[in-house]
Length: 565
Image (cartoon, rainbow, N blue to C red; front, top):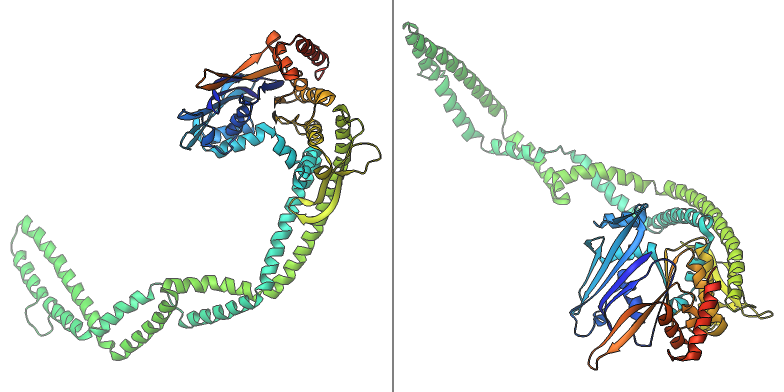
């Protein structure tokens, strides 16, 4: 729940602290005093779009700060930690969550979650778990079929929630299979053409049978064959220098002479050098042998082999031009085979996917039937309980029914949900969207929230003039029902009716003051005579009227004896 909120530089409010706490908080004030800024501030803390026009005239920025009491563990705490924030421990497994939002006059916006800067989207995620806001726009939203379906699903609790989850799983599976099957059937000609092209490409590659790095090796071999005579001459000169076949002095002969010369000297140092000369003689002999082999290889190679090499290089070059590189051609040979097998398997795949789709359709039909049955059961109970609430909200003859009918299939099911209101016996039920007045719509929405909260509680409800269009006994019952809702959830209501405010255990008054040049508003918590005076003002427009104060005391007495107990 919201423990406290502070508004600074927001609209007409210069600086105000709003103590909230558990139960039912009513916020009242004269027209133009800034009551709506309270709801605006809460909206900013819930991640709603920032508007620089809400910054108080003359101020550089507006700031909204809020303190929430939340469990130390759970989805809210997890989301805060994911954003880098922390909760302040408050004992008994709970913690305080600090949220803030700042809007600069030039339009920039900053948010803070648990002491750390965070995007506004984090506030949106938290708001979905912490707060439900209802204003006149939400009454209009209740007219939509989607909102009515969502309300029914919330009331249905786990049975509907589980059935909807199973249905969505089946729906996703069926749509995925159907989409794949449609793609194959629709693109069959294109897939056949692709298979033909791929088969031709693979045939060309298989005919050449390239090896990785073969083009590089052949380039080097071609270079050698092209320059064979020059290479032969270089190798021959080198071999003759190492080991001559015509008796001329060579490295082997000279090294042998040096070795024999050292054999006649008896000296340890020269003996070591003699050993190195032996090694040099062996190495010279090995190099000469290698050069002889190289020359023999060159002799065997010739123009015929060069032609073969160039022909092979030309074949590989064709593959490179077609596929970008030899490696890509080889890769296509591996991956293309699998793709070709897939394309060639289209007829069999169509048969298999058709069977899978039929099985998925059966599963989807079963899941859809179960969801519809659970919704119809919930609809009967919701209609009965909401009708009881409407009787308590000064609509004693009204009956709310919830119709569940079959509609087009979607991810939400195959059910159309419609709230029907019969305002009095004998009247034909009419859709709430068409047959309810503004005041009736307010009470229908409140009745549904009270009933739904019993199975799907929300930590905090915020009502922005939900009592619009009603008065008298109906207003008293709205106040009484808000107090009842506050037994299980925190309720914050901006109201202009004393009959509603009387049932609040926490009454905040937004007061506007002006020194002739600057207008500012502040927030005061009302108790005792101050509350009686505000109640009198709400009742008669005069806070000092004895008759109005007497009426206010009487009304507070009624609320004190029946205020949701």
